Length: 563
Image 1 (cartoon, rainbow, N blue to C red):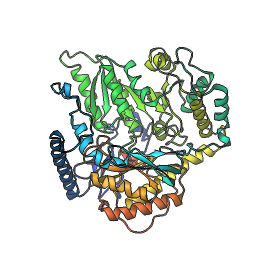
Image 2 (image 1 turned 60 degrees about the vertical axis):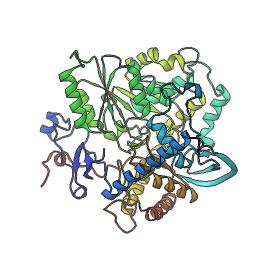
Image 3 (image 1 turned 135 degrees about the horizontal axis):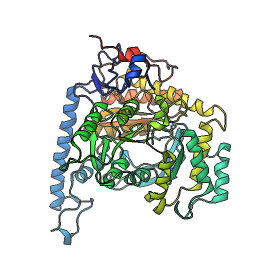
């Protein structure tokens, strides 16, 4: 979460941006969950990197202007709703039928008001149609609207060679056919496209077993079960782990699939502040002391729901301290690694690999194949007993069609490259190139004066724009320059924190990144969105150090903060 004073957040503690460059973060070992024996030996049990993620705030006048703009837009929205009610303006939105006019309104909530009167004005910034593979250059079909963005039509023109910095193609596996994909082609010829059955009936193929065994080896876990849809892997499997009388502690910025899965459980849900171990510990302590509401009985089970990398914030899970808390309070930990698996860690094994923890420290591993692996579907991994339980209780196993064998083959292809079984060292080279690209891109944006959220090792780079009008015009102007970007606003973010979100890939070259940075720099001056007070001049050279170059020793971490 952003601090109201504009300070950065390190290990859940606020720090002034004026001193963050010159001081290491000093932390208290007990608060950080580091065992006493580690303190006595002066050696951390599993990790010696302080978490540093910047969440800067803009000047006060930017926040004021953002709120004023939203108030004015809302006011005009109500005026237009009155005009539609009186029949002066045509209403293209979903409304109740005439015979239902006496019913409780079905559509009249704030989100629908927002979409009808604010989102529709800038809707052309989303919903683009591409007609190529999501590589570094893509082809986009031109679209126009004749009714102010309520509907679109394609003109028939295809915009060629649009530089893609929007897709989750972190390691560059999403490409057109080449010889490395022969295994995928052979799988298509052998199995066809679909399975036409569920996993518990006739839908388990030998290639599914091969994928599960390979994924278990890659993650260093006992067993894995794969599913055909990433979103449903969360929403349909979380309910089999907890139910009524259980407590779910969920990060406030968790993905909607986690939120939906938690709601379907019937358990009590309590959100904690984003990536804040102090907030989480307060909830855990309160849960143990007070128990269930009204009865005071102990909770049957406490499950902590978190993500490895948060897709809107670009932040990396504070895993070591959360693991320490879950062990201390005897809770269970469920980690969604949709964006982190394959993208971070020296071996691409995700957030656990990034921090050097054991796979047993996470009770339930979850991830998807839709990002790094350029496929589709998801997985649940962990102890064999856990996965066996999932096989016999998951709604996906009983009612959902199995993963396409072609998709499974694509994941196997990507895994073998990552593990060095095919094209030795190419997987490690892709991971290292991704981290080098991330460091360079983030560093240049901050030097230009933009406000950037998240972790320096995250392939997701959010750049704050704040005002909805600037969110829209930024995307439109970048599109005119043949650069595809993603812009994000409410309800995916808070109403006042619109942003551009860049997805970095190992396939991006320095020339490609420099082209994007040049255009962003020009638009930043044009739109006046360089909000950072720490703008620097001069062109930066790529720092070839590893992403862990901000490591601190245990003595530095455990020392008292200097005045």
